[in-house]
Amino acid sequence: MNLSYGSYLKVPELLSLQQPLSKQPGSERPEHDEMLFIIIHQVYELWFRQQLHEGDRLVDCLVRNQVPEAGATLKRMLTILKTMVQQIDVLETMTPVSFLSFRSFLANSSGFQSAQFREFEFLLGNKNPRMMGNYPEGSPERAAIEQRFGAPTLYDAFAAWVAQRGFTVPAALLGRDVTQPPQEWPEFQETLLELYHGHPTERGICELLVDLDEGIQEWRYRHVKMVERTIGFKQGTGGSPGAAYLRTTLFNPLFPDLWAIRTRL
Image 1 (cartoon, helix red, strand yellow):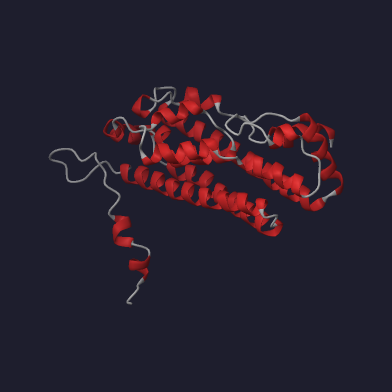
Image 2: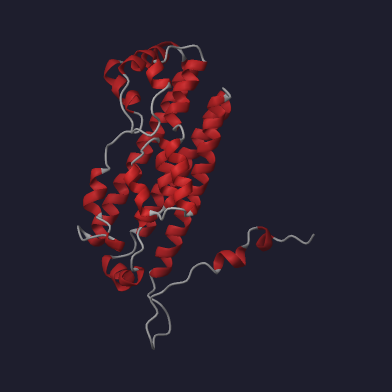
């Protein structure tokens, strides 16, 4: 088998996927910054795919009580998340005028329609059933998101892991409705305090989860500010609410118990 770098990575196919739409009749080329816009968002979709890949492995590692592997997977997810945040710096080299030069060609498309991002949110526990309405019933995207909606979250796997390690976890938490959004569990917070004060292995996993939660919040903040500096408070593409909605997503922790205990440590 003659396998080359390009054939293994499908480079010709990959490079054929950037197809700007803004070329005007009589113009030699599309608007310059549309290529950057396409590539940045395609790369985001690849990172979302990898985060889902790693997130599923993390859940599996916790279920199997494979602590070193779980820690390594979390660290990889954090490193990827930092890269995702830094990509915003590249996108912000595009001025509002440059974006407006091709924005109309985006028609009804919107970042709100990213099915993989919704899957990632649902895996992390931020589940909102209304978001499924952005995807036609029976579509592969809708099926994947519905599966995530009904599946245990990363925090459910974490709580089950803590119980597996022999610590007290409320039965109500272990048997909760996994479609519900994050909430605090005061009884579980007592166990977390115990872990922090006397169990460094478990504390290490807790801190990595806090890092992940903080990183997601940082990514959301940078995303909001990028949208504000690009289109202000105009309606987003595809009729999405834009920055006004994105602001409501800020500072909502995924793992509130791990933040609530801070004042008592």
